Image (tube, rainbow over all chains, first blue to last red; front, side, top):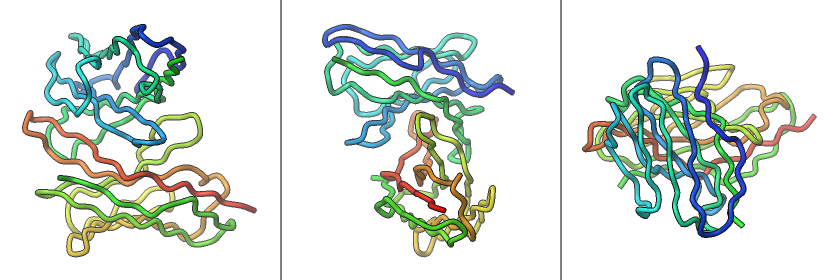
Length: 115
Length: 115
């Protein structure tokens, strides 16, 4: 099975712009989660989608949003970019996201740099 | 709240040395526990997991045992190789009120293995 794929791998934007990142989960996986990784804050949970619905959200401002399509592919959007949004954005998929035992498998990430 | 504490790095070892990376957690309820590994420029790869007390997860020579009494999940390997050089993350998974689950990560421990 192909793993989780994320596009693009690298992005450079300027402050105030917006950006959309894409994630394709492992075939058959219905839950997609997004995480932000920075040197200062480490790995932080952004949100999780299942069956095209956002089930859970972390403590991020409303500038961070996402959606999931009927084929389970997901996108996340960051509007009005700030310098502090520079990070590695990781997408993870799991079969159902039900139960704490459900394992999340990660993609390679999208490296976003905000200038 | 839920949290994971792991030993600070970097940890520098000689090839064939014994490895221990300490991890302790705080959680409400009964989480699953995971170790993920991140190589430079890549996403997170699942290394091993344990879903209940006294379970031992193992993979590629790495082992960790879920110790409920000490709330720990220490990672061990009997003989490390240069190729094991990476950053290792301990994480716990809990069910969220929305029905999904999310990972809470430790800060990561960088391991360098030298010849």
